[in-house]
Length: 212
Ligand SMILES: O=C(O)[C@@H](O)C(=O)COP(=O)(O)O
Ligand SMILES: [Zn+2]
Image (cartoon, rainbow, N blue to C red; front, top):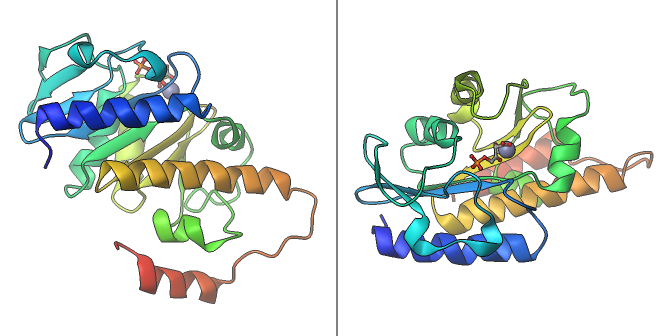
């Protein structure tokens, strides 16, 4: 488990990289890291490209603010993953373009909302769940994510965007990046007769890579 100073350093570095690559715009994202004393989370209304380490919200294990600015209004949403996935130490929410675009489309299977054209999404996150729309910061949104989080480290929130949980900061961010790429592929391949991975392919990937 990271201490607060190391968590702040990591959060700053990954957030800036996410911003610089256009995966978030304005103040439309939040990220938290579980530490040995609680959490570090981005303040509400903060921009990933211009974070200040001294203003990051530091929370204790009960979620009380210890230092920094007012935390993201989505802390409860992040907490849904931490409560259901005790080994995870990082949660990231973005409004990245393709995953958010997909969040606005009708969905045939809310337990497997993103088509598996290539192995990496299954290897990183497994099947992606889709939860219904609730307003940002609404406790009902956190409750909906809590319901699926134990089985799904990657979730798309309808008409809003993706959220991903990971054992490490790296696995969380890489999982989010792959989710965005997979949604991009889904749009690029729309209208083409593209081959999906078969059920056997996916079972094989799960056996080889799940929880690795
Ligand atoms: O979409 C929203 O408003 C939130 O889910 C969000 O992305 C940013 O909220 P804050 O972290 O409170 O800025
Ligand atoms: Zn949001």
